[in-house]
Amino acid sequence: QQQVKQSPQSLIVQKGGISIINCAYENTAFDYFPWYQQFPGKGPALLIAIRPDVSEKKEGRFTISFNKSAKQFSLHIMDSQPGDSATYFCAAPGGWGETSGSRLTFGEGTQLTVNP
Amino acid sequence: DTGVSQNPRHKITKRGQNVTFRCDPISEHNRLYWYRQTLGQGPEFLTYFQNEAQLEKSRLLSDRFSAERPKGSFSTLEIQRTEQGDSAMYLCASSLGALAGRIDTQYFGPGTRLTVL
Image (cartoon, rainbow over all chains, first blue to last red):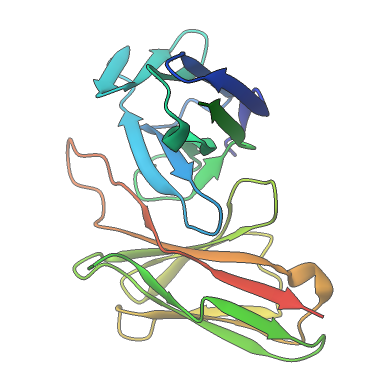
């Protein structure tokens, strides 16, 4: 069973700053690690995902850094904007073997507030 | 918009009543998932379908919960004899399925918020 621990629980940054959210996982049976963004009253939306064969993936202002040996991955939001204020969840596939398409185990979430 | 849709968006019911939610996945997606999310928590997996076959169920899915995907398209989640502890957001997600070298992304619907009085 996959366990995912996410920190911090909440984060406040100033506009233009860098937001950093961390996740640690236990199970080594995986094939990707996604980050989801959720606004109040909405379903989670995929933000960015990384495969374990790369150490970093960047899409616009969002970057995932992956440390396989430490079993950790993090989300960096550069030039944070008030519109980025949302709850962010890391996740990991929870099954063994064919993990792609199986359940996702989510972290507890990080509530990000970007002040103008 | 051809994303995942869920109906109803909100449901208020009295304890002991039965409720049913519907999820329409993205067309061509053969995998469909149900999750439950309570306030301040991440989504928790409930069950998963590959086409019409229910392949995995969580221990969270008590015998009062039943899910179906009769023709491998839309899915329903029924909760019988609802309890106040069932109050949550019920999320549906769909994915295309695992293909070599490709991340099998799960796309979520807007959810159905259930309130049990």
